[in-house]
Length: 255
Image (cartoon, rainbow, N blue to C red):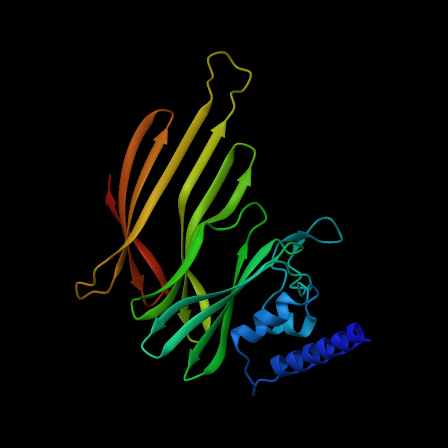
């Protein structure tokens, strides 16, 4: 009897929560969402779509000739974590980090809180088929909340792998990717069956930091170290905010 009552209470909570999520006039807190996700492996489809917890991966269509993105809701979720991203004066940004094995993704669901009132902002989708990003954090960059995602795997396979630094800037009411550059790149090409051919290797590692604002806005500076078959090269670049293109644009400083 107790188990049945518990199930009924939980089902009613899920119904109310999903109804509240679907209504544009009502909001919910990150702790409420985290509680629902912790206690329910099968996410309500309406709630999943509202929060952007959908399948964004590219798959082969039924005809076997074309690729498609279904945007189907990810109803099965795994690990759930709540994390404070940034607090500026009386405004807080909090994320509910949700993992979905079926959709091979992590979803960073961002909330903005002020005076005990919470507002769902947007969801950042991170592909994690091969590996999770090393870390992520938020900071104010050129007057806008910006989420830094470090070592995001964008490619992996036989003899190659690539991990990027990705920046998501709050533009209007959505987080947009405005920066996507390699942090670590590794390529190994095995020799063909030809006399004198050797294994070709290329390693690339970059470090990024924000330069102080000198009146023209803050810049992202990069130091890139490349090693190609034993030959070393260091490249320095700067990236400034391009208001018209709504992205960070590179300015090469040369090796």
